[in-house]
Image 1 (cartoon, rainbow, N blue to C red):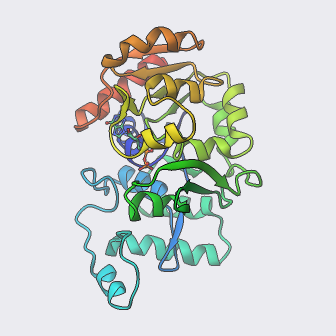
Image 2 (image 1 turned 180 degrees about the vertical axis):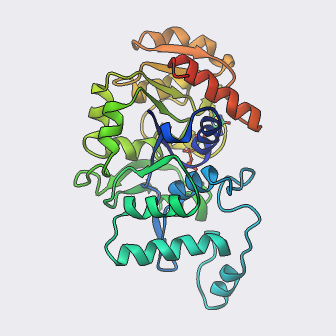
Length: 309
Ligand code: GDP
């Protein structure tokens, strides 16, 4: 069994590659839910949904979110009634958020809902939310405290980040199956996801970081930072705000207590020595994933480093 920890954008690229290189039944994907929020009264789980749509072959890879060729008629009409339209919800996508909101109201836990949706869309891999409890990533800026989606989508990550915290994390429990999956995995992969707001919330759920430290299986990460900058999004601002240097070395430091290996870009070879001084192995190989072939190649490289073939 291969356990994968992921957010939505960079994570989905590697998850896509892995899904083409590993039998679906062997894949257990543990997904960030710190970005979840309520929009038009509906519970939206952006990372879970991106991963589910990606594995179902429905995802819009170019945009990085939503369903391919979706239409936005309902959103336009919501706007007519004064509803906010900065968060784009497609018509087909809305059906998922309506279903999830209804099932939550019927007291079905998020993990159970995720399982039902996975089945309905024909996804074979296991997808687990990090927790069934609400954990909310909060971004503290000069203008005040924002939810992740307000910071990221509404305000285009323009604000200076003073601090990031995960409201509700201390009282949260890992979703059923999460700790067992990590304990019994043959290998664990941390996707090239934002270390602060995608992997950070997962690690903040009590017990998960400890399970990663204790697991006997090898744990590898792929760096989301190449040559001192993220491939997309605000990881540089969030890492700097959280006191990490913006580099593959900074990523390695964020995970050093449980990580065995990290894949870094060839242009970051100069960091190898400092990464290895942390007690982990640095593997330099191309990790930018623009095409489907890139995604498969990075997946094969990380699997080979873990001897998971
Ligand atoms: P989010 O939930 O949308 O923030 O998704 P993630 O956290 O999974 O993805 C964001 C991270 O993916 C950013 O830090 C990017 O630098 C990283 N990323 C995006 N595309 C690539 C890529 O092609 N290669 C690598 N190595 N990282 C990438």
